[in-house]
Figure 1 (cartoon, rainbow, N blue to C red):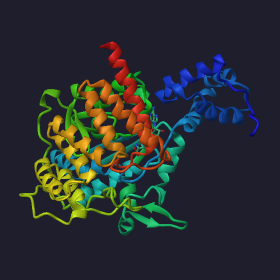
Figure 2 (figure 1 turned 120 degrees about the vertical axis):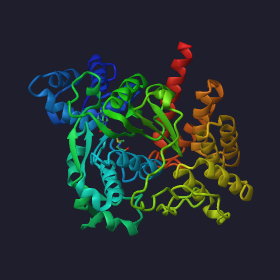
Figure 3 (figure 1 turned 45 degrees about the vertical axis):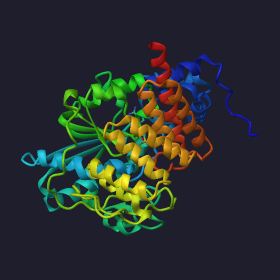
Figure 4 (figure 1 turned 120 degrees about the horizontal axis):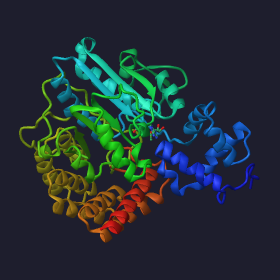
Length: 475
Ligand SMILES: C[S@@+](CC[C@H](N)C(=O)[O-])C[C@H]1O[C@@H](n2cnc3c(N)ncnc32)[C@H](O)[C@@H]1O
């Protein structure tokens, strides 16, 4: 084993102090029980600065002259920046089919759009939004004032984002035949985003924690849409409960907020209007009593391109196939399609916001293919969207019965049970999800997880179980 170049800091009071300061400044409660990992990262900065121990390093961080620049370097070391274009297909389907068309219609006279991607890492998220906006507005795009800002605490990520140059891993959810619509090929499998999309986005360093102490710049206001995805999973739930309303207050009335895949919490519904969309929840800056309003219908805009959705569970394909375009509002359930395409047909209807049609087709599909765990899983999600929790629970259970290793079904069942106050069974389902994920490589995307990796799921389970334990203690 290689000799360590710095002493083990764990019993060192300086290290505990440093850890508290890092968590307080960045929100990264994630490191609370990860001393080894944090130390590994801090040690790189000790080596680079030639300082001996955490106490000396604390001195540097607190120095009024050199401290701010060292914080920038440490923050770049401790943050995690996994991202890719059109991550979470359900959310991009909702953005394309309902949310952005609604905003565009409402702002048509003003012709001004303000969008914030908070915690944007290397830029794939705000650039995906730029592509959508550009495609939805078409020729009219030039007549609008479009301001998409990507922010992150990690300055090194922002530098990469400004280059707008990506490797094929970041483009993995874009079918190869579509790549040249958005990118210019460079050498060595690198792709340069086309200028018409790049020009819509600018980047700026911003710490989300500054929303809580009043130091956030004043221009972070009056947004039509904010995305803050896969950032808050690293934060303490109490911090999340303060950051989310602060983000809401940066929205215009009627503006939209999207969080990451499983970040929504029942407490947010008391702060905003929560809208259930297939596989995701969107929030609007509206009084919560208006929460029962339906998902807005997409007004007439230029026909959207096909949504990019994830691979079928059964196929476990390496590159995601494109699904047929989601109809804006299917009039009636059409004749049953081929068995293999049933789950994607169900999704397409749900993605269009027509849960009733999705529900009808899902039932027909299950009659034709009753042993398909993916169909039962979708049935569960649709039943939840239609506010039928009992039916959703049964559907998730059937999916699990047919495929015991279906991590996302265990997870959604766990969420449902915890929300229903059934803590014992909820914890068991969550633990099963975590155990299945623990048996996989951390970076493996989960089936029906829409980009969520095995490591992400384990972390989410931990956060939910901690929150459930705390609320159990309070109750
Ligand atoms: C996993 S990435 C998510 C990127 C993108 N939102 C997505 O979902 O694809 C999380 C990002 O949040 C940033 N981040 C972490 N803490 C932050 C904070 N306190 N303020 C702003 N950004 C932060 C990290 O630097 C990282 O780039």
